Length: 382
Image (cartoon, rainbow, N blue to C red; front, side, top):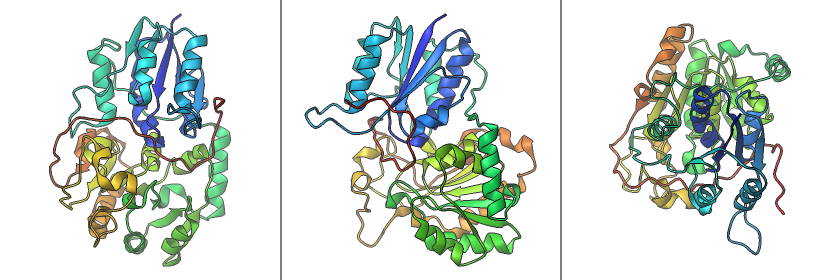
């Protein structure tokens, strides 16, 4: 029996979820290969109980005080020093991670999952394509799955949450106004308008409390929307399972909802939906603002990315250019398909509504994003 290691260290919850189809394809291609995953907390907890994974190593973010290399580099090196793998695949090339993998002595390594990327090729599809090109999976490999494995205990907790807020998930549209940076959030007033219109159409509405309860209360307080209290990452996933729809800012929670089968309307501004949007059933709405800063293939070059502020003084975020009317239209389209499972077999690219065409530059995958969810098992940082 062979042993494989999948290294996913791009930093965000959504990044791990976008890599799941690649992991699924690898496990389908060789059921006798036992795969471990090395990733960041808190996303690591999403793989708890996943039958595709034997062991999950959760590395802490940050750097030692006396070393420019991050903790994850040291923990991955320690793992590779003590355990031999037959195959190692990584989507990460920052901080010398790919060099560690290439020097590991593993007979088969893949460290170039981003090669040949295009501005409108979804990342999940890109990774699977590259695995085919590298001969890691067969050309006729079945379509991989992004589904998470939830426990009955987690589903029971979610059921109690829904009973507490007096809502049936299948009759409820959930709003997620939260994102890792302010420039990735859709304006709260737009969510207020959306919630009011959905309520008038007969749908129940709930708002995720998240890290900003005042924001959630503001949106819910304008109408009859409920507030879903903040839970652990996996319990949040269980709460999203079976909902009518999630309307979300550019956030890993949009991909989390998709991973438990929920339809999603995703709202994108500085991030290019053609690459990072949610797979069908979804509608990804790209800001129509023709921003000269936007770099679809390398958003780390955008001045707004690390500053967290729009470079145009009269704007807070280009997400604001996505109108409530367009989001409502996308929501209605998905809600009409809510009881039609056949509609969920769409091509992922069909769900993207794009703004201006991107300028192609070289792809970069050296991202590390901040975390806010409770952490799971972690590697030692010393």
